[in-house]
Image 1 (cartoon, rainbow over the protein chains, first blue to last red):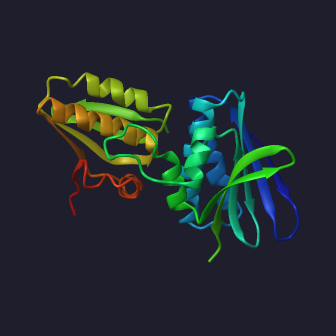
Image 2: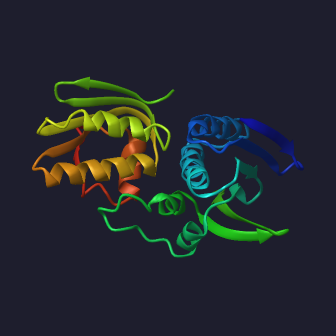
Length: 140
Length: 99
């Protein structure tokens, strides 16, 4: 995992994690994100939720996009903890805005509903010509 | 840690992490149990699972129902139990959670 930690200012710390778009990288990506969150002061409720969200979203990119790499930005700000990821496919983006669990016997389609369940907000963001998903878990 | 799958006469004992990379290993292990009527999968040692693991469980459960067999998830760890709850699968899958 390639990662860059940046102290943007005294209130904002962020790190970008980049792995090859391959499912074999998921575990190390989760571990790297957890390590950063721990070092940045996240509590024990935040870390597993981010690991789950990162795993779901990165899997989506790996399985449905043509990107060679998966890049995840984790940020701590005054608002809370956030996660940004590009490359999530259009079908899943629809699920972001209208999240519903699939039929109980469905063998796919739960990923983004799970992400929504563990985050306070999940939005599609368009900035500077790129589109990505931003998830936020607010600091209580 | 990756996913470790041990087999015993009652089924499978899992430990590690279940995601898109390791889920095919569980599929393969379940296929090897085709002759067992009551399959039990011990999840106590599964520290992480995402929807890739859920999808395998849903499919395996349906296969079991279709062939008059029973698939039981034993002792799901806290992380696994929470994921089953979020996904609305606690009442769909057969789960044996001892206190």
